[in-house]
Length: 426
Image (cartoon, rainbow, N blue to C red):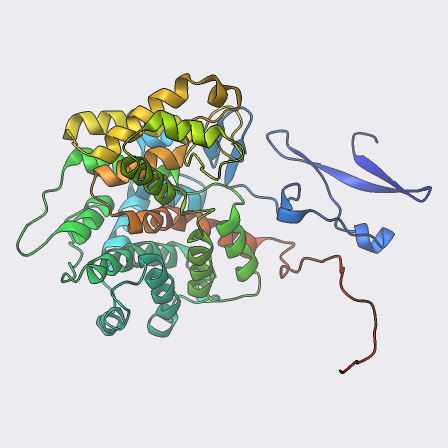
């Protein structure tokens, strides 16, 4: 192997494949012509060693605990930017100037209302419906009401179409929650910024007006920023794959919502609260629960610890840990589950079993605690994740659409079924 090519030898014959290097030093072997040259394909279950694309959007270094959007460290974005600015950055490759920010914000405001006829849809869902399933269905249905944002026109005006979808997505999410608890929907207000507007739609009531608190708006902004993108995860890959078939943007994003709804992806922070409830119902014996989690023969799992990508620390969890403790001190929450969470964190961070295995509290652990502290119900946790991830999904969709080597996704397989056989009947 030289600096430009990797050699693959099969049955004594060598084949050369180009080496590709990213701007941060990541290396890959381009096997686009592997089957054409050799007759072989690669087999990589879960695509854990397969790069599906080149991307300029997000960089992750799991060993060093680095996360950057468009080159900007997540720590800087959380400290200095709003979620709206971060969404613009992901979509357009740069932070907005004053004029761009005003235009983007104006479109967000103008697009926040949902078509009145779509309100009837909410009444037809069973009250026990999970908000993620309602959200997915409603996003898919948007194409019948807002045909100006389809797979073709959106390419011509990503500025307007992306702002429209980000805004109405948030409104649908809030309406889904209100319908699930049998309360009247709360319309968006023109005088409130993005996060404050969402909180008001979620919690305002004719009999109990919602008081918007700056501390809660601030922490929600941070939560949305750190979840806005995370490279080629399951839901983002789903968006790229579905979008590659030139499906309209609504159906494409609906696929991302469905992928995120799985317990192994977006449902992880909900699983954290379920775990805390299990500890509470078991007499709040945290030490006993940890011993069970350590036992390889026990099915008990410690949720919200460790990460598949981050091997040293999760930079998002580092941010949220500080925000979590700060918020709980400010609002003075008195809640059994939150107290259990903090004690669990304290014990696990001092236990050699978890330290030696890099099983530190991750972003799902702290986000679950924060969402519960600010009043977000558990079945809305994944919806919050979807609201945050939407700008990233759209950015990856647009990058895929604009790519020079754009192709419909079509993985291969290794067939392991029956060989040719006759029809046999008893």
